[in-house]
Length: 243
Image (cartoon, rainbow, N blue to C red; front, top):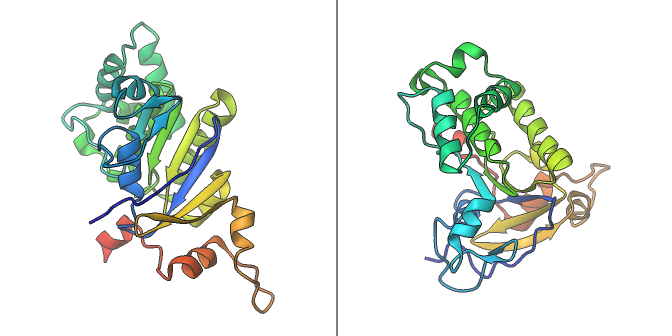
């Protein structure tokens, strides 16, 4: 079975690039390939001119990744998990603990939660810690694989605000997969729509909407475009679990 087939695109430095697609469409596989967790059978992937196969260590120093299935040391606190992650990236110094507190509180964690075991936290709160862990290393490329899945509306807005700040204040390049059409619309400069491992459309949100004609005075939405191009509903992993 081919998971990603003849996919070709370039993300500009400082761009927020979105990837939409049905479950099983190849989005998460694409993220894993870029992040060196999987090896491509053919073709080439480069991150800031570094080849992911021949120069994986150089790529790993430039990126960080947040996924739906983020893993932690559950007996440890968010503070302890992030300090451990900081050491893996060679980050040291007395201000690291301060940075951890600033990032976690910016994402809506209160100070008591920062020092409590991760196993006592909801999935949504754990996802916010995963985002904080990725932000701590200040990556040049941030790979976000459905980062707001499982979050309540307020928490989603907090994460989205931080994503925008990263690009605006630090020039971070961001590749985002999401099932949230509003999120894609708000955050992404360009969006690729994937289906069956390939890209069926790639453009700005406005130009993607122009692919579908208006009907009865109704302006097409990104969801209309997605349904038109793939013939499939956009269902999140979270919704599947509930079902």
